[in-house]
Length: 170
Image 1 (cartoon, helix red, strand yellow):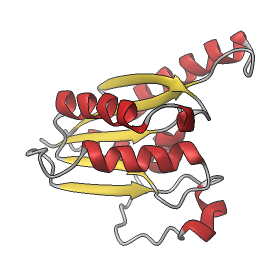
Image 2 (cartoon, one colour):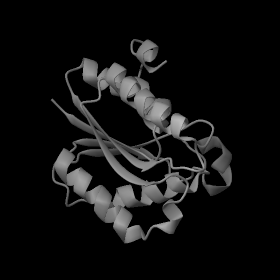
Image 3 (spheres, one colour):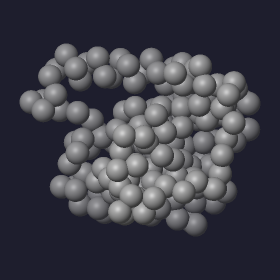
């Protein structure tokens, strides 16, 4: 059994980016954990929306088979206001708890600043001192990643056949 950790800047990035892959790992008997780095807040989002988003995230990840969800609860679209060391340390504590053999992280060239900051923090948290780690893969989040082409396009070199788990992702 492998331990997989998916690191997502926002709730739903994990489903959009690698939901079918998550379901495939689970179907093979692997253990998948998720770290969601941010949360919405009022007044930018209505309370009803935030409550519903939490329910949707829990339901979606139950469908995919995610075993554990870690939440860092940093404010959405404001990671650039948090000291990088604080983000690095918080994410490192999740990595230490999850002990992943494979980690999925956002793409470095994503337009969304939260995604780029979390990419950098992920590399710090997943540095070679994490003995269990065998592989780090970046994932694409459509509607964000493709708009960041000037930062470096997403050019995948690993593919996962999710034809059997696509219905779960959808």
